[in-house]
Image (tube, rainbow over all chains, first blue to last red; front, side, top):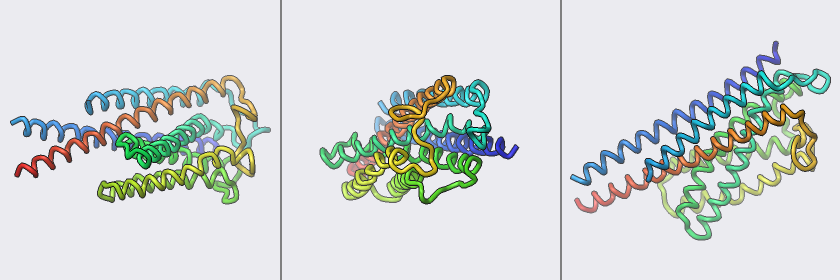
Length: 45
Length: 235
């Protein structure tokens, strides 16, 4: 039972790290791309 | 350009996540359990299917960090600097995955989470800490040649730990197991090897996706600051 808990905890931590990093990267990328779009739009005007 | 690169990176990252999930299912359901005579914690042994691929992906990232640092020092190459930044982030993420799962497995298998006398475990820990330092420090410093020189120097000298980490279990094996595949490897049961290699593929795809996403983030940041500088110049 304790052995199984270690397995669950390890994968939870690793999935958590991947999920957190995916969320952060996606958020940063979308923010920058939309900011770039606005700036380029203003520049064209 | 930034947008196309970003879409390619996101697609690869998503593909990598799907492949990693398949690896996890294969590792938990398809591969046989090891017997209790060879391992004290047969369930925790299944941590292996993400632990090893994430560690390998981080070693790949540390190698790219070295290549990027050299390219920056040697040619003042902009792509070299971008490779340095992206690889430092990848090294940190995958290194953290290996370094958090390892002690949990170690605690279950050996009864000890961290062995301070084991060279492999400690050099890998230092490598992950170095890449984390590079990620955090870069965000707190203004970009410029001096900053890039300092961080690239850390990337260059830190790389000395990569071959040391790779060879450590061959030269001074204490607690961390020796190689299971490749020259001098102990060998793996075929379904375990298949799952492990599938995991390696998943993490290499994740690594490639992360590099492209970081690259497009850096491109977008540079483009924004260039446009803003031009606008400030006009005013």
